[in-house]
Length: 244
Length: 151
Image 1 (cartoon, rainbow over the protein chains, first blue to last red):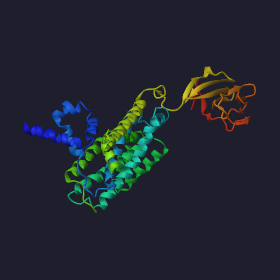
Image 2 (cartoon, rainbow over the protein chains, first blue to last red):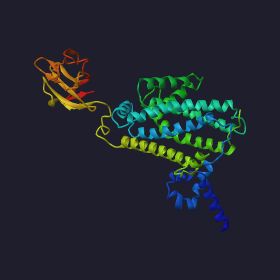
Image 3 (spheres, rainbow over the protein chains, first blue to last red):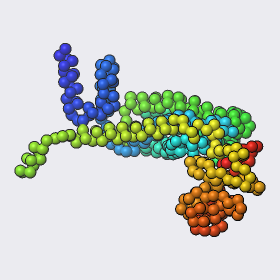
Image 4 (cartoon, chains in turn brown, purple):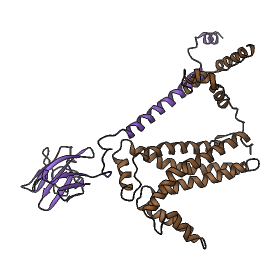
């Protein structure tokens, strides 16, 4: 009984400290999550612990690049799902539906452009993040597995970009995919097999479009989410790396 | 000294941190509602977004525009004039680039004329005379079976 009172007291003193309470209430949808749900799950406690986690002094804005990448990923997921509502992945209709989204659907131009630009920003941010990690030596043990995981995330991000580039099915995407899928054919012995496997035929065709669409919207999102989860769990467990 | 005391005595309506928290919260709320609005508008079926055609084009029945006649219709939210002559069909913006009046087709002169200041255009939108500073926008139009396809 006494212990509980003490805990309540502690909570109150924490809340007095700032207007933190207001923001927490906003986040936790005052009433429901704060009330009955919090009693059972201690959501506030978890939130406070995470939002109040102290940050070491050497941490500067270059440490935000990973977060920026993740933010652009969330933007991509959101706008991507919206575009999916109108996009049609057939050679006859893909370009038409993209034009339709851009010209006829309310705010279609906005979401398409955000999806386009956020993808560019994501790739820039992921490279800068990688540079930051490299120059801080943050890839060294015990974080070496996180570096490997991060490189896989980079590959997944680039695959996202490569598959998404074909989807509007215009001249530039068709030829970029033709050239891009031609590259693995330079590998000795198995090169042509890989090319045919990626294209789903000898040429870039409807099968290629279907394949790239499937990879872009169905396969990559859950896979990258899993790797992202592991990426975050590991950095959380091991803590942020030291100063230069 | 006196002033400092006065300052201390002022009633605090809201602490600085609370105020900043409200600013952040308000910003997030504004951003979230804008996002929700645009996303809903995107998903909400409208006349335009429901078009099965998927492209930009529209079609009208050939019988609606007899030979040597014209018809004004809406296309992408703007008025256009569809003209049918023995040469074929033509679709042009109906908005005069001079002061924005709606132009008319004069079959006798084989010209498009603006009723406001008598700007004259040919069937391809080129300026033939009058105060128009630019040609009329021209759209692709063709007869497919018993329909006129525009765009």
